Image 1 (cartoon, rainbow, N blue to C red):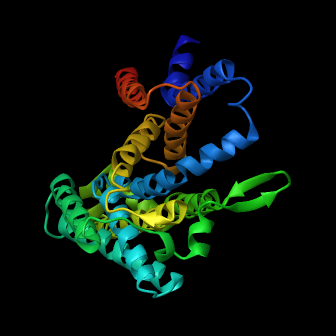
Image 2: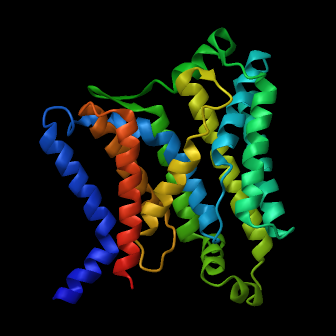
Length: 317
């Protein structure tokens, strides 16, 4: 029995922790926390982070990571807003933005997979490059007001009416991305090959798997996710700032690592990443309702991430 309990904790400790956090805030704020409206608000608040974290999971499925997703989201936001300001229309602006993001991610994959530069160095370099391009395009200024079409700006703040509740549009986008990434990783040959690379890169290569090409594709998907997040940011805020997507990177990686603690093999899975994002979102929401200073929120969140990952590692020794 003790061994079974230990195995259960090893497998679902992070999920138990999430449930405990929810119960704690429910007790502390019984009238406002556990309401349908508040949970819809949480899903909207984490929707952009979810998209970045889900597509970052694809990169981590090949044993790599992408530090440039935050600045790529900022760059995508600036590209979209600049094109809209130049009256190219919403569809053209969004299409060009996603193409730029896809190519940016593919460039990361090319440098890592074909030039042999480690993902830390390669994506650290592109992090700086993409951030610089966002500043160059905008000249350091924020684009807002009439430059952003009204319909595009309203999309990020409205939703689907379901009775007396409004299901946010951004939450719907997040769920679509979740479904696509889950299906890709868990139900396709492409996904199984990515996990084979994660398990043993050399064995995968000897088995005939195109390791370099698949790694490049994984980075391209990560870039595309950052581009979608950039568009979501622009729509929700009805403005574009050259730095507004930068914080996404650290939170996305933290969410993926929190999710990894739920898997005995240490593999990244998108549903586990969703739990990781929800932990961060619920913490932020609950601490805000308790009127905890935002700086203290960062300390609490960071400490919990370290504890969760640390305890997971210790329990598997």
